[in-house]
Amino acid sequence: MNYGQVRDESLKLFNQYSLAGTPIEGTYNNQADYLRRIPGLVDSALWEISSGPRRIQEYKELRLDPTRNYMGMPTYKLPDDLMDIVPGGLLVTEHPREQPRLDSGYMRPDEHHIIFPERSKHFHGRVFLLYYRKPRSIMECKNGAECPITGGTCDCEDGEYGQPPDCAVLDNTPETHVPIPYYVAAHLLQGEDNF
Image (tube, rainbow, N blue to C red; front, side, top):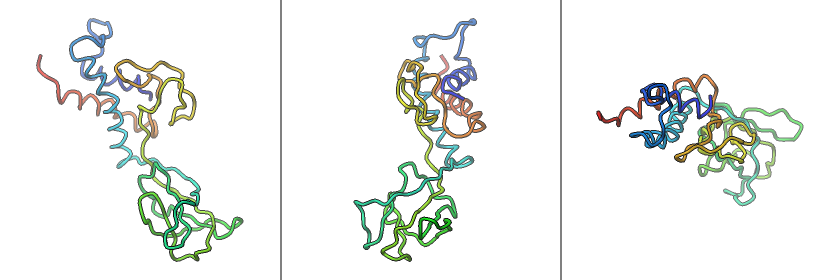
């Protein structure tokens, strides 16, 4: 599902999409306010889904961080989009040709780094991480820029009122996108006045 589909479906759910068969302009009543609030609500819904019912898994090889050295041990940099490590998701090799194996003897001296105190200070094997990542914001998609979700270049126009382009693809799996218009519409209706 893309941003334009979510926006239109959300507006349809509480009768703010069209009036007498004509799409409602952004200047009509509270329409501009709704349009400005939708991107943040979409991101909020993505966070709710990704932190609970449908987490997003990612697999990466970690790199040594030459700028850090805790207790004289090799220090590896964790991904910036790390939300949590998958249980049993840390695999280590002692030698380049060795098969990776599970390792639970690690410490996190801060939220950006990981060390292996049980291993020798001369350990320089490879470290692979299976982790849950943070969802990517729909606002990161801009016309002419690389889309952080699809990896392709976004070639549709940026939306009015600070909205992302209509073609901006939502993060996570397609089945997680179905409840997002309902989430957005419910939150838009919470502040609805009776006029």
